[in-house]
Structure formats: C-alpha cells, structure tokens
Image (tube, rainbow, N blue to C red; front, top):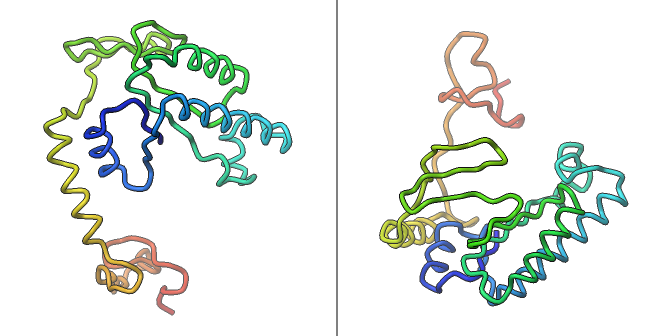
Length: 193
C-alpha cells in the first residue's frame, strides 16, 4: 500500500499502524507513475504466462509472489487529475492486474464510492446504500500510532525468545492427535509419535 498526498503527521501515524506493508510516496505524480508501471508489468506478465487475472496466478501458484496487490491511496489529487485519468484508462485495459487506486476526488469516477459528511456510505456499482462508513478519527489515529510503534519495538527478534510454545494436546480422544493444547494443528515435525 502506498500513501500519497497525505499530510506528514497522518502519513507517519498510518505508517506506524501498517508497519512494513505501507509506504509513503514523496510525490503523488511519482506514485501514480509507479502504479502505471506496475500495472503494465503485471499485464505483460499475465499475457506471457497465459493467465487471465492475477488472482488466477496466485491460486495456481504461477509466480504467486509477483501478484501481490499494489494499492495507491491518494488524499489530495491537486495537479494530478490528468495522470489519474490516464491511469484509470490503463487499469481498465489491463483488467484484474492487482493494482488499485483510491483517491479523494470531487468528480465521480467509474468506480466511485460516496461518503457523505454524516458518515453514510453508498457504492452504486455494488448496489450498497444506507451503510455507515467505518472511520478512524485523527485523534484516535494519533493515540493508536505510538501503541503500534511500541508493540513493534518490543517484538522479539530472531535472536530473542518469543512466546512459549503451546504443548501438544494430551487428551486421549483420537481427534486431538496432531493438535496442541489449544486445538491448533501442530507442525508436521512437532507432532507426537
């Protein structure tokens, strides 16, 4: 996920929540160009491998890691409207290429989602109306970000010990074979013999 056009404080907080799954672009125009290149590369790879969608490639395990979704979130579309229009056209031609763009814009687009000032949500192309939009207010985001940073800082590294492993189940019932005391499947190497 790539953030573009957000103020620096909001970006910092969102980066703290998302960890290494979110990056912030230094330029909205560059972020759009990156999404265009990714869509073109994925479309070519789909043609080269003979798959119709990136989802099909992931399911069939055809270069599955290459099809990770690229989502661009744009908070301010000022001065990039033409680039966004070109990207929308390219995405339409590319089909399901694992690239998506969410942009806050006044002008409705083909796949627009309406969120009103009172928080109601409408997605006409999915026939969704009268739904409440979920939100994370800035004050809550500001309180959550340091908690997430602290949790990541406290997470054990490879050379540190983490949580204690859950022991294998000891119940005599045959259905517990190969599970831990919480009922989760054990790894093949740690199943009792």
